[in-house]
Length: 516
Figure 1 (spheres, helix red, strand yellow):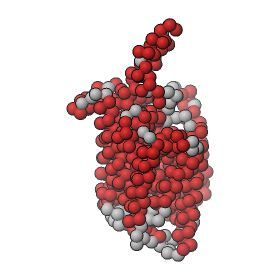
Figure 2: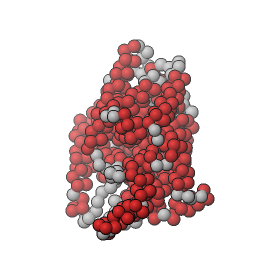
Figure 3: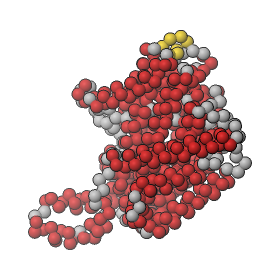
Figure 4: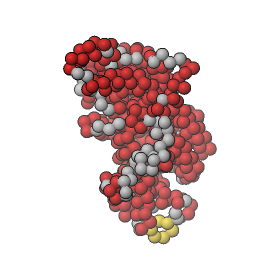
């Protein structure tokens, strides 16, 4: 796919987002940026949240990860259903009853200022890391599709990506995001369906046989019943439930959009419908992974046969398989599973597949990152600077803009660090990071909601720091200490439990039951 066509598609798509931003930012005020004036239709929020939940990580990393762990990721998706139910029927009633702008205001009312600032700080850390990982993927795609040909360094690619997102979110904030994410979800799902159709065509699989081909493939195995395995079903299921709770229910970015619904009932309808829709959507992405590995299997077979050849047979072998090796030349040197889908889509599957892929990955990344930057801006403005969101003065608007730009710069720096240091798939990297950064939030909210006790507010920051540090060493030496057991994503649960126990150790008098 030519860089010129790639550029045209990208900037046409971006022009559409700017137009939506223009329409949604008319008659706005400062509160519009933070709450969308609490007037969002629940079904729009639900559709948009599909795109935010999926992100570029699912679009790229999940198909590639199929070659390593089969369909075991779907065990986590099943666990999501339990997690989203907890969000809808436990957390949301509390948020709506307290009429929160930032969900971390709950921690202040429940425990005090130290817990409040600690919760917000862990959100900053979690969301900056998660957003950076997600944007890292789309920046790599832009690098492959455009900027490598132009000799532009990766830092410029990242900066351009963040600039585009900042431009269309800077005025109306969450109100714009609700509408742009709805459109981007449509492009994202259309792109993955188009990818399945194109790859099936390349494999000469008829439409009627696609489902059978995928289900019969060994990579489509979902359940792992080995207790010592990192993908053991019970571990993945409960990890999925708690990941959903912390990365949606305890995340200002995700809950900010939910809190723009008119009523609690609307917000609950949004959450339930969104969670159910994630089942077929994630199956589509996993199916892409199966088809990708079927497509590349002839190359892997040919390469694996090379060590068994005598020197005199090399020339004849390569001549016989010349077309195959030329077709897959773009894969040479690609060691990470994250690079499989974009490399094939942009170089092997033709123009239509390339355009669908660009639209899909751009929609996925923007749908996640735009809300993240707005959520970070909201949390910092409301939780740390105590900005009055109803203040219409120029000072408040300027402060909001400075914060928005500041988090964009921080995100760029983290992406560059990840680019040069990480060698893992991004989906694994995000869940590993979430286990350490969201764990203290899980423990604080669990203690607040499940007990009527208060705790020493000044001790909370130390507990929240100590818990992930302990988890790091437990995880590092778990095989030696726990008879071969290896922690996976469930390290998040242990982290939250340690925070809970730490707060319980410092428990004292009862708190106002009206908040429970």
